[in-house]
Image (cartoon, rainbow, N blue to C red; front, top):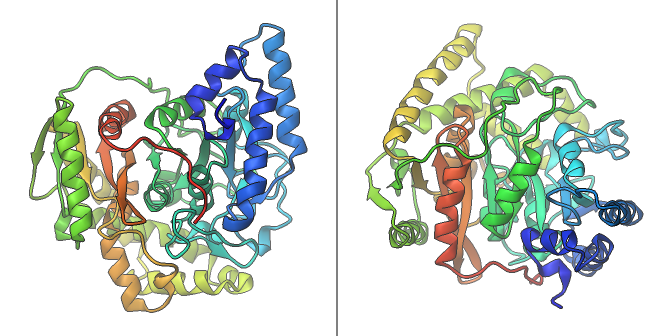
Length: 465
């Protein structure tokens, strides 16, 4: 039989459920893969093999008793180090939080456990989960397994690197400014940022977050196949009363027209030719699957949404003050926070109220557009995945990067779902597209993503370069 760590989650879960493979065998295979490749990429930064093996044994025992083991039974996954997992420190890449040990699981981790998933370990993130790169003083840097000269993305860079390298079929990530979508893009896999309220979230280790983060921050899965994204999304979306934002929306909605709008350069953003080519290729794949695809010159505003995103994101950090950044002393975080402050003047109370009021009008424009075009195809980024760490080299370079990353920043404040679909490679560098849909219509994005995926190269884990 093929090495179990190579299998998609859907295939592995079926084998475990049918007793053709034990959860213990699947877990031992995944742990062996972790031992073999993680030293080269530093994606998993906390783990204890005894724990996943104990969970796997419990899954096997439940199956032997004839009990329902759950949709992810026996599937090895990883969890990002910025969410609470009982018995582990929620470091968020910070030395300041190295002893902040969770006493209970966050809702998303609890849901993964209920689904029978086997948590292998915890994945790296930049300090404060602030960048599209993954490096911090506490855990070190994560390397992209496809090409060590380019970023694995961030802030869920450890999660994406794990999935690409075969350390687990699935990974948990979080996204407030592209932190699921961009690492998936950079590592050549798929990732979905669900609608606000789809997946419950809360960390007991910290205070409730400011209104900006409440409106924009979500958890989401990363995977090598669209089918695995669908499986993980269902498992992660179960109710939890600890999150008042959770919405009991069905995972499958009513039929919609198979119609997509393709936009190469929203708001006139800079887009490299290779990215434009990938977008048009994705559009042709959808057309071949029977979709109507119309190339449009522009979309409802993204830059205005990105401006509000930055204001709300910084409001939480500014309220805490620069002292926490200085105490941590991470040079990357200090540089990025300083650059972001230069791009966004400190708002007055009226500015803050105006931003929240404007958000509603922008969302209305998008919802009306999405009634006509249930799927939008746009860039994940205007550039191919970046080399390592140019964002901290200069303010001008960072500002240029912000323009290229407009699709990452413009979506969260709207609360809409967005999905990265990997479409191939440019040399050794991954490329892909972003699909955007209406609220709680992840099912439409998954259907379109599956059509694009089916006409490309089958996904497979890789050995780190």
